[in-house]
Length: 276
Image (cartoon, rainbow, N blue to C red; front, side, top):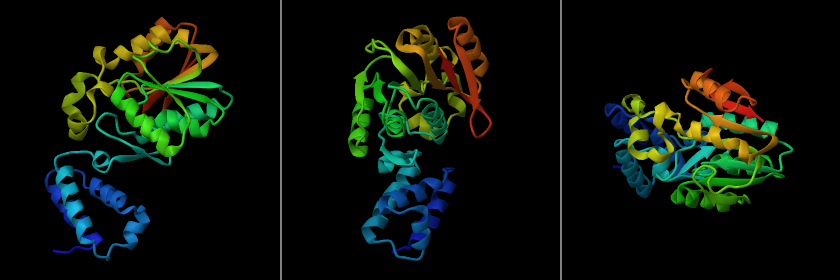
């Protein structure tokens, strides 16, 4: 039976809501499949969905009903005005991380070199390569599969950067004017309250860390001084409950470094700048 775009969305909303799944994913996949903006989708509300598109949408809704993220279903996620390829090898970029990128971009106009440590899809480093065209960006990750996705995004977006496979700084002997990273920071104890789509589909390697989510920050604090130029800076995202522990960690491990914590748009402490 044929459906208009509006009818298809209302059907999907009913199906997904009955399963306790956020129906917004249906709108996203329909927009991406049709190459529509949100306003274009509204304009086509009463137009009939072509039969192949409807069949595809029904398959997509079935996957959404199993908590599969909409971004993985269509293979792209928005970040800072661009679409990035995403697969289950990389985290889906979050809007909150755009605030971290904006902070670094505003600060680092004269930087010659920058490092995106744990790049995943490349969203942070490739965005900064655009925002800071005179900065030579290096993107690293411990995961070869993640680097393959980041490489594809660099090619799609025509961003010239260097890629290095590295476990933190292990294969990165040089220094950088700034380092930026969204390290894994979730404690395994938080799994009971986490979104099922994240738990089932996003890579655990990029989500979880030992010691209540602080293990990677501890290693980072031990190594960072050898990899940032004098007067350089590091920018980190963290969980909204971790500021007290991180403030203590940085004061103990990096006593001569100025740590500036910043709240996100929701008013939560979510990022820190370490000024060397």
